[in-house]
Amino acid sequence: MRRIFLLLIFAVSLFASCDNSIKLLDKVDTSFTGNLLLNDSIISHDVRCELKINKAEGVVTIYGTKQQTILPLEGVKLAGLRPVSDGFGYLLSGVDVLPVVGDSAREELKMSLVEGKLNGAKFVIKMQMSQGELVFTNDVSATYVGTLDVDGYERTVEISLTENVFDSTVEIFFDNVKFAALMPVTVDIILKDIPCTSLYDFQFSAKNVVPYINKEPDPKPAYKFGEIYGGVAQGKLWLYAKMADDLKPSRAGKEFSFKGEKKND
Image 1 (spheres, rainbow, N blue to C red):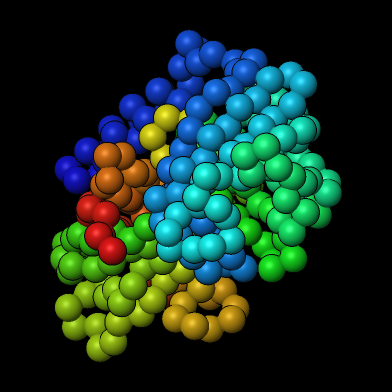
Image 2 (cartoon, rainbow, N blue to C red):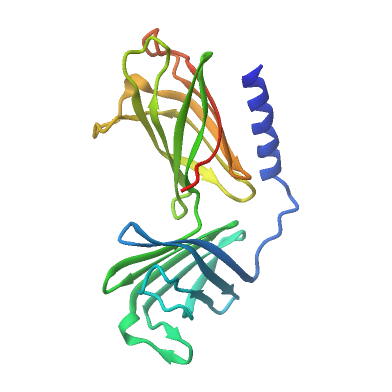
């Protein structure tokens, strides 16, 4: 019954994603709140970013916060970015971009390369500066706490999602999971490069995924997932997964279902 319920939810989501009423974008004037990262480390939360795009150019303004000093509080404007539309979103690019603060160009903030992507409600922009790579993103990168049911065995676990907006993929991390009560140890499971979309609510799905186990560098075919799908809506994650049928009997065909809420920092 649980699997049927999840399948119905997934079918509704897919139907919505095929809605022909979606309007093609010809211009953008919006804003986002997200994280600011420097060389892959978050240096500020709740960063505001404004995005304006027309056929001629893209303009991005990112406002600083009190937690970091790289970007001033009044914001830096990146103008003259080249927009390329894919119908439902945009790619932005620029070379040797000179940010403007107020009315003044700031040579010390010069960016050798700027690359951005708008995909539905998701926006990410990467900026190469003298300090390294500065990134603004409002992607889905969060940890969810809830109950993982594996063939009737329930356990409270944490599952983390890390979205790559540029590649339209998500990494899914199962932290300390067990397949059965008598399983002697817990394992970490990482599923990489799972295709996702955020045109409506965030959704992901894939078949025949070979996971990474614990911190081992190579994927493990002995733990292959035949399918996985799920999504995030209103701060809650749900997913269904099934291990491949051709594995050893203790793993073959095992079904995973999870429903949890976003973990507060």
